Image (cartoon, rainbow, N blue to C red; front, side, top):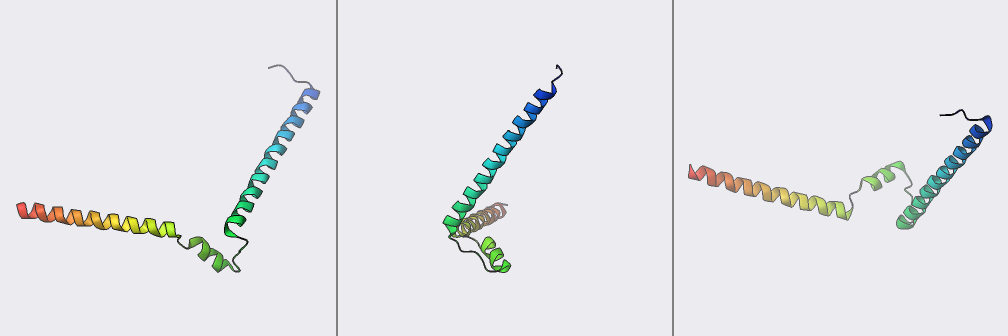
Length: 93
């Protein structure tokens, strides 16, 4: 690669700074947009204490509790089938 002149290096540095600034501005705008959407979805309600914030984040949602119930049903069914198979195999022997 050929040697770059000092002017070309300076131009390249300026171009890269501009690109970096554009990326930083885009990321900042995306974070602000996400924050605005989050505030609109959840309202402007903020927990008044750290304990309330932790419990709000850890509280199971309806969808999570539904998924847990479905998983429990599936496990109960699997255990019942396994027990029935064991009984059938034992009674045949």
